[in-house]
Image (cartoon, rainbow, N blue to C red):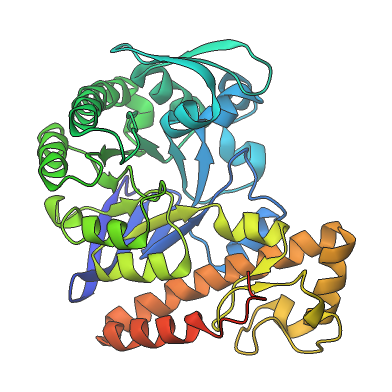
Length: 380
């Protein structure tokens, strides 16, 4: 069985398409990972996530450590058995959630002490504890524990956080390797930090390469800096990382974000946007996002997206989905989410095909023009 092997099958400019082979299955890249924060891709059954085209999903260390608890999940057979998902799972380290959701956090070289947003209990998350939780969950791709600071902080603060993240990366790698049985069958990714500073990004990449990881993430983006600034960073950051390893852009993003990042050499993505938007009445289409709460859809007999082959578009009208959304019916959230996940996975398949055919620039430009759609003020 293959523990972890990344193969690049075709390139087009900086973009690549290929596959990551793991014991639990093959991940086609570029890949979008639906987010299963609390051991569920919200409003979807695992079989429907597979049918949508997903090869891998993401689970969240912070949320699962608080509820139901990593030790409980381990006793119940691990995350795969617990949630009924038999394909690869990537787990994030919990660092972002600790620093964004928790109250009264205290950072030190040891880790982050924090107060649970659920019940106020105190916890400590360190590189070693983060890796231990991910191991207990049965994660197939483990993420190193890192420290995230806003891109608006002074450079000296960004530099200190990056340097600490690199020390934590080494501790994460050592903790991962200490679990020999788990490490023999799974993988660990390091996370590049450095905000929007090219020099800090380069120092971070060099430190991670020196430690050695199966794959590398570009962290610290999609936190409010805007698409232009993010793309400016991606013009250099992925190229600082090894070309023969997967590159993962964490927490991204909107469809146009993904297209632009693929053009710049990114292989993996995750984002809550398709599921969160589905639950709030927003649908992604090739002509741009639609807000199904708007009254103009109340008698619209057409499908969400006339070119979409998904079961939702083949079966139900915009008028019916408008009714479900406005009525707060659970089925509305389920159908909208399924369509959105399928839209994202179809986009990834189209990107893989365009790279293989050498037509990525044409595909990307056409997609962006169509996705911009009409600015009527009624779209989400």
